[in-house]
Length: 290
Image 1: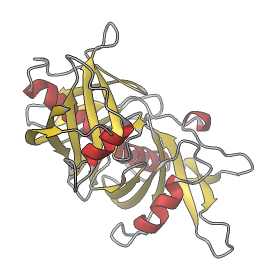
Image 2 (image 1 turned 45 degrees about the vertical axis):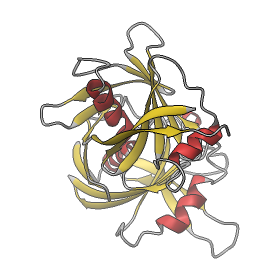
Image 3 (image 1 turned 90 degrees about the horizontal axis):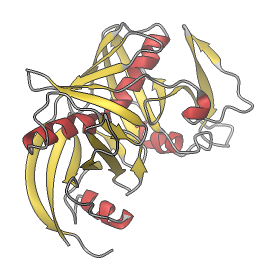
């Protein structure tokens, strides 16, 4: 099967975007893995599918598969690329659209400066909805909020990390580090992602606070490994920093792939993320029957 695709990136988080508004492609897990493969496929952190509206009051459906082929609830950088894609492909003339994801409806909007702002909805703190298994654990006070101390191995000398736990439509565990350049992302990231306390796995964020309006961030993403940027990870990190009293309501997040701006006014309010969305190239590829 030969399909058309568009390669896009948002702050270095890169995507293969598929137009399924006319008909579903019906790709298998292995075929999503093939598309994401950087040696044999196109190469991407996630595969984004644009599908027709599933309900009244919604413009499109947005389906996300990680590089491992698994479907996930949300992708913030992808949401910005989604908005640019539907505009560039003539699928809408609107500056803002309502988009159904696995975790709810989001609203990306094109800005005059070419960047895209996404209303990501309110963060979720109920542990069962993250989900996070806190049975037998005691939360530790951290400013105006709390974190959870988790051992990353069964050995006595194993690391214990302090994690802020929340969901931005997908699960996140955020720890504060002195310097993201030397943070143990490659070693601790997979241990946190697969920790048994997170039954659906988790995105592991490593947050360095520069000042109250500026942070640096690296994220080891569930099902993708470390990426150059993670939009929901940036949202989660800033929310955790605000709740613990370390950050103001508007924060610039410096990732390895570029700058994101995150705004959150507090409990019950939506998180707004603004950043770049760029089309890299388009093409056709033959998908093997796998």
